[in-house]
Image (cartoon, rainbow, N blue to C red; front, side):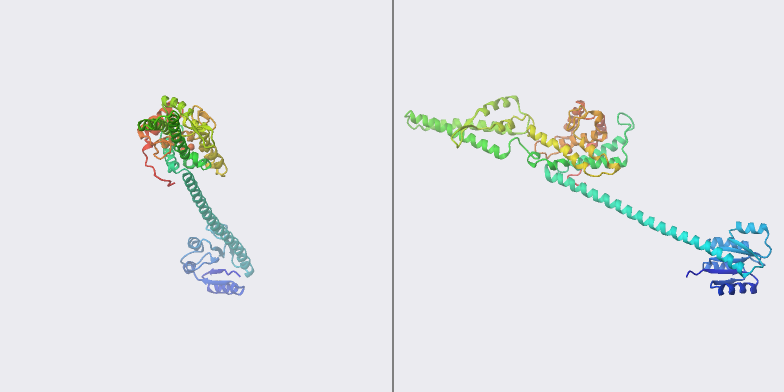
Length: 473
Ligand SMILES: [Fe+2]
Ligand SMILES: [Fe+2]
């Protein structure tokens, strides 16, 4: 059972003792104090649920003074005034001072108990509400802590997932190591530079912290679809794969021997005597011819733009024949070899180029499966649009200027820049920074890249920001 401390304050000792004993006999913990000062001392040392106090006590504190002081020391205590000559004024004053109730002397014990019961039931109700509130606050605090921890956990988990995804891209295509991270750093820096640009075409754009975060994720994952492109195509350094080139060179060598053998056979048929000079010259002529053809094949195999005379010399290559082991005369270079060597720029055939380009759609399909929360909802679309160009000549959708999200326009600049300056792509050597900037300007002038965003990229010297070598996300 709950216990409640009750204090009786009255200067009349008999009366005080009577009340204390009466309340104790009813089962209450009760004490007495002979004046206001003694009552305050007790109130400082422990909590009283209810204090009954006389209104008028000679010398020292009055009942009203005591009320006020008790409220300061222990505001949870309920005070009830006992007064011998209650006037309306003193009653109002008592209630104003925070008295819970007052009873008029003389009173019967039953009246005192009734007043005490009322006060206690109110007191208990208030304490119950307080306890409930405290418990509620504790639970809210606990839940808030849990939610914050959960949010941190989810963010960490997601960072980890993005990091793992970036590692997966780079494991697939080590030659573009660090590309995703560098593009993310450059793009976010460019977006921040846009934020700092007060006027001009980009003056009205402001990316919030959440939008910068969204842009960072989109940039980190923009090439994720490369995991779905075959490694052979992704890392293809030359037009012909090594074994195909080897087979062609071997066939040219065989053709050389076949030619020399035919010349010698012809000489024997004509009963010519062995002539060392003739034999040597014949072989040397065929060797020279083979060497020229082999050089031509090797030059055409490079992923460079081919000069016109080389393109024409390829007709000669196309016509070369040799004796296949099945006894048939066959072409030294098969039609697929010729098609590969005729690729005018780079190392990829049209079909291979399409396969590489499909990484954008694959990125989008992958990212669309992730339930991005509200502020990150545009990650798939921003990444999906990183190879679109303002004049509609980009891929995969051929979107035009107004249909391309501003974030993707910024990313496109950084993506092209990093692809140019990267030293490690299989099909090209690194381009210097000044030359890369010239190429970017040419692309902007050709309405491929956003000329105003490029201006900010150049003015803010985004290309100068320190970039990590590897895949530190
Ligand atoms: Fe890409
Ligand atoms: Fe890229």
